[in-house]
Image 1 (cartoon, rainbow, N blue to C red):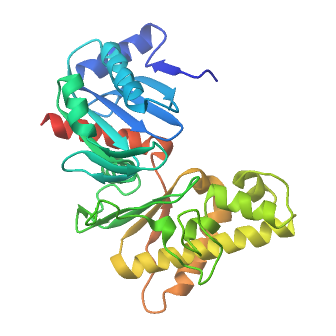
Image 2 (tube, rainbow, N blue to C red):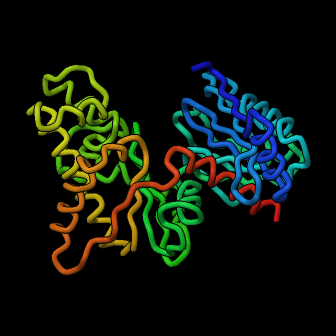
Length: 319
């Protein structure tokens, strides 16, 4: 795969007609899911159709300049008026003022992202937290569609959560609500890079499962490869079983605190399928003595949830 990926809807006459239909369906907006390794951008129509996609690696320096360049290139690809732009970013974020107070994987501190993008683009702009934007997308178009009470938990290299209750997204006093991966669920457990011990993502995350498997004497494998060895590899069975147990503890806590109707699991680890969902459902049910567990489902939007949420934020800013 090349460093830059660009996909326009359609490569023949029929697909060109689809592109024209998407553009004619209404106004267009720019959407970017800004991550530590990649910037996933798109031009989107209000009906949800992706008119054009453009993904670039996140550089090690001048990330802000690269983001602005990506948005400008997307605007050129739109081929028509653009009503707004939305950017979903990681980190501790003041979403009202659009200030990224801290994003470790971007090396940002107190970056007035919203003001900068408005000045550079001269169109309405919205800035949102990446996981909360993904939660907005799942609620609007994905696995939590129509639910006013749900939790989205993306499990990839790390773990976070979007918390929605009574139709409102919980952001917290400092914008840091949803650090689900750093709930210390194992007393005096293994150290986490955050400085705490026993954090959930130390045990249940793509990086955590791979690291603990190697530490137990296994090969250098990805979490997906480790799951493929279940039933034939005692180390894989033990490490994965512990990971599912820790995740079940965390989800039980979330259930008792927030009473969600649906728990949506996203990220790469959610692709483990029955190896994850069947034992997880049993464990969460077993941890809830006096109530039924919420429905636990896989994300309906997958890796596009953050970008889709950024698009929804863009149209919201345009209105």
